[in-house]
Amino acid sequence: MFNQKMKKAEGFVLLQKRLTKAVFVKQATPVSDIEALTRYYKSQDILSELFNEQMGWA
Image (cartoon, rainbow, N blue to C red; front, side, top):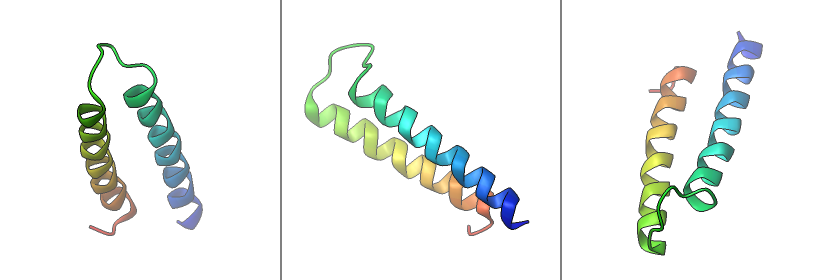
């Protein structure tokens, strides 16, 4: 069970890295710094909720 949770955690870390790159590096359209940060923090909230749910902490 621990190994399964570790694999899920590793997947979320990879997803978080990709998400950060997508928000800050590969923007489809030019956005302001404030909008980029807003997108990033919203996505982090959602990712955190999903992670907690998958780990059984929510």
